[in-house]
Image (cartoon, rainbow, N blue to C red; front, side, top):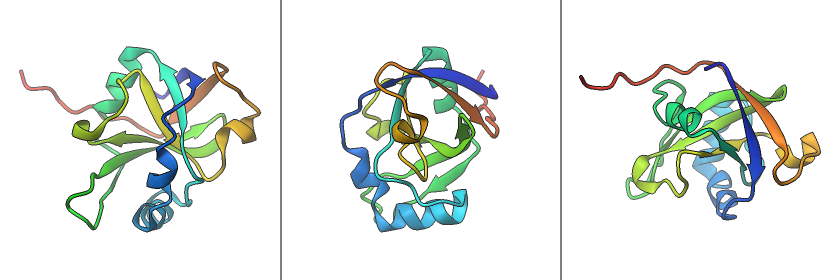
Length: 135
């Protein structure tokens, strides 16, 4: 999977808290080369694409200094040419079904792309190595 399409959907409005945490900002700068803009862009994707993203084992770990707080992986990507990353939270704290993915970027993607609810968006991943499933 090098690229996939999705449609913009509204989220729960909770990602701005996560993307504003000092440790998230610092690790995104170091690992992705940018500090995330507040919030994320939520996309409705085909369930198979969402499941594949959830099983990607490459990317970078965003590790909380507080063991009580969840960690997440970020998969470097671009959204129509703009730098971005798909967030893959730990399964125990996922708030969305795998058909909804969250993307962080150094800019507000809705504004930068001049897109609205239900508009299509194309995401290109740097790479996605699947986690081998037990036989």
